[in-house]
Image (cartoon, rainbow, N blue to C red; front, side):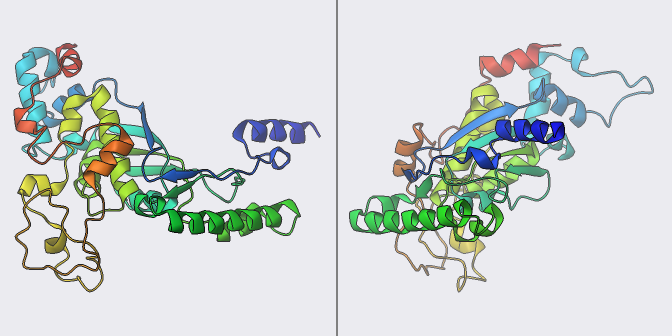
Length: 321
């Protein structure tokens, strides 16, 4: 009996106690307007770790730390060389960051969670949680269409009513009832990722050819990192910014029958001979995304790493022993 009370108390804290069924509600959210990303875990000094990892293959038999022996300027040079891919890539795998995410759809989570190397995801599941209070993320183009929005809201609410009927009358568990939950349901989660893996993920997910809340999620991840470590954030770019040309149709040139639904977003020049597109528009609109996220997204010729001068936030780490 005592053990049952202990378990119930713990489940009460976690929000998984069956008797604590949340009040049913369904808030409809426009696109990326509720995305919130917090940086909740990070190294004590990521720049020192990168420097030591990058220089670890040199030294005499005493093998002393090199960080205290070099100037701040040379510490910066080594770290920037690593960020530019001019040292062993392992140096960028030595640092890991953890983020807390809310305000994105289950489908956006699925895109993020495709990362396999250097990434770990901690997802708020739908088997052990009652989702009667779950919000619904509606793509902007559907939310702004009054007729469609009304139809979608009615559809989602009907599904929520059925979900409540299944779990409240004991006809099914949360596990079986989840089969009717929509892909647009708000899906909170946390994830940790090495910096190298994050660079790779952002090179793809910052492109406007991706689903809007997938794009919004990773620009928000970049912004959260920028608040703490501006130098690290500045190197997170869509890969098309590095090549200075659109890669969307080019990268899908062998599979346009399956992959290319949209036209180029226009961020970088599109010289590809492949012009096929099912929908004559970009997948995600930068101006709309900026308005919803509440911060400016740099153009391809802005915020460039080669033009970046070390911020005072970064300098404190480089100057520290």
